[in-house]
Length: 536
Ligand code: TXA
Ligand code: MG
Image (cartoon, rainbow, N blue to C red; front, side, top):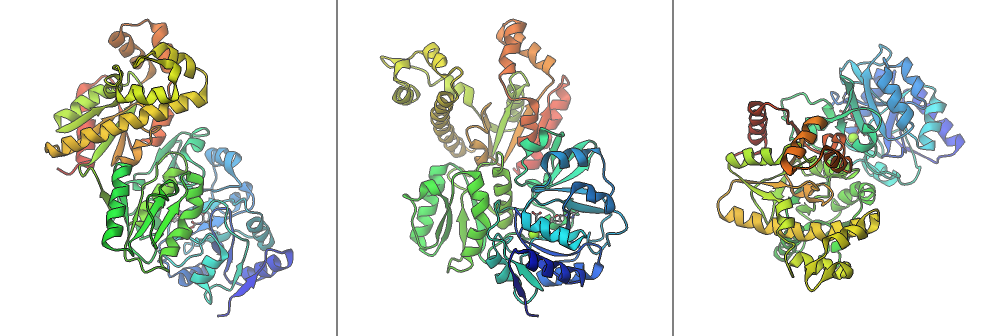
């Protein structure tokens, strides 16, 4: 087959639409990645798509519409669908709905549900409108390889296999859409993307599907069937490195020393420290990472690298999607460097009972690092923390002694100064955490727990195997704080009002412990987590 190369002009889009209406398949740009589209009501078109991609036909396709209301024709909608569509569509969000008969089972891989997305890219929208029918489209790559973020990527994978490719330039986002299914009033995230958990949870309650962080069982039926296949992989195997950043950098340098063809994915900020012919750099911000990742993974196929090692970015916001794609590209192959025992993060609101959970984890053999304790232990005269603080806040240190009220006054209601203070304290605390963990490892501990109320803000989540969030209802927390700290109800209230609400923890943690009043239940929950994440 000869592939027709089209431009995003009205005339060419009309040509593309004619191809679709005759049962052909056309690659087109969207704001996320390029898609390979066919008529969503035509089983034959779906079969052509599967054949062109070399994709197993039990992996369902997403149908693309130009307006949210158009979903009525193809699926059974509901209130949450419209709430989400009002907030985020057109845009990089895909919603799973029960399908109507007009969508053949070939499109949905045999499922009774269909994935619906309304892209915002003007060329995609013009193309769908010109077709006048929903367009079923997976990403326009060879099955298993990274999704295409430019027409050149599509050409490399599908030249001679697609009837036409519309070149709309590079994709703005660079990672595929967020996929949610709707269950019991929740939006359950099956694939993270540019519509982040934080954004979703401002509109509907959100949960994460377990497949986001646990390696899928080959025999199981994952919620998004596509997630069980090897994904996003360049032609070279990838290993994700987790551990203290300095140790990751050292590990990378050592690997380069052993074999200068080793492929490395580093952060832009390490450019001065790590150089080599197959070293590639990811921007430090999540948006830049999302945009660069797939192209960068593809580029390793053109090098002589036999293995690629990558840094693990932080998981907040869009970072979760970046981390998810990297983890899949690595086939869940993670190597812990510096510290080899697994580390669980422990966080939550004050009064929710983090310390109680930490104590139970200790009974299960964990080494517990308490960041609050580390912080308070570092406020003595001329401590490394005070010395570091003096560099940035000279007025708050007199004779090596920290003037805490002066410091508090300076950062109070000044966000920039508060961020600076946090970045200084986080660094010093985490250095100490890493030191303690190395010691614990030498002492023979099998796993460790890092108890930190600012775990995510410090970026330490990226070094944890999983993050546990402890939650409890507000009244319970207030009572606990009053009892524990001997303060008034008023003070307790004002203390918790400045903290993250519960949704924050529900959204970002891998597992939530509800700390009600029943001790037995709590112990059972903690034991379950130890069993799931720690193989001793
Ligand atoms: O950004 C995107 O979503 C891009 C552009 C082209 O729109 N499309 C895309 O499609 O990434 P694809 O086929 O590469 O990924 C679709 C994912 C697969 O993991 C599939 O299993 C899941 O969506 N999916 C599709 N229909 C589903 C359904 N009914 N239930 C659960 N998961 C579904
Ligand atoms: Mg895909």
